[in-house]
Structures are given as structure tokens and as C-alpha cells.
Image (cartoon, rainbow, N blue to C red; front, side, top):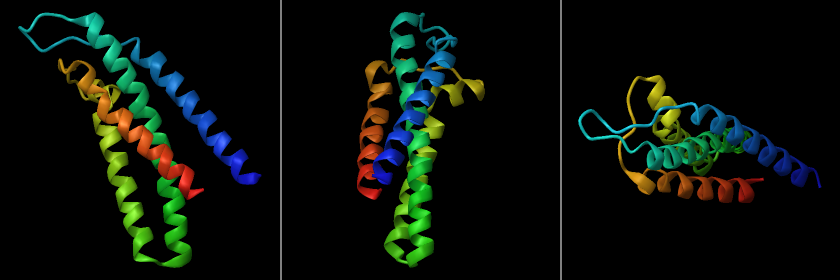
Length: 135
């Protein structure tokens, strides 16, 4: 019962983070690079969704990393350490691929269309699966 409440709380916080990322992302100006024209409508949809997914992924991966670190600390198993490294690597991917982080660094979005957000969708599915089996 406690595990279900914990998972529900994690999902609730993830949704709050997703909404916050959405509200921040819709303020952004997603355009193509210099000289390539402007496709703001298409890019805004894809990159807003990508920002939401990457932000939710980052939160879920922080939770997973802490779970795996606790397991590693309690057991000392090399497999658990591997899971910590795996989840931290995915966390770093999530952070550096987030359009919000890219814009903070002063770069512009590129014109990848839906392919810009698909990796984050699959990472999100993987993170939720790992979170579910790790609780």
C-alpha cells in the first residue's frame, strides 16, 4: 500500500514538473537557424512537447538514481552500481537534450520536426518501466 502511494506521489510530482515545463516552454521562441526561414508553428509544438518530456524524464531519472543508489549502498552489488551509472547517463541525456537547457545556453532549436521529441518519448517510457519494477 505504501509503495502505491509513493508511486502515485512520484507520478503527481512528474505531472507538476511537466506542466511547469510546458508553461516555461510556451514562452520560448523556437526558430530554425539563420538563413533557413522560420517554421515557428511546427517547431513550437514539437519542442514544447520535447521540453515537457525531457523535464519529466529528468525528474523520473533522479528518483530512479536515488533508488538504485540506496540499493547499491545496502547491498554493494555491482549490478546495482551499473543501474546507478545507467540511470545517471540517461539523466545527463535528458538534461542536455532539453530545449529549455539549450535555450538557456544561448543556442537555437533545429528543424528535426517530430524526430526531435521521439527519443524523449521512448526514454520516458523506459524510465517509467524501470521506476515501476524498481519500487
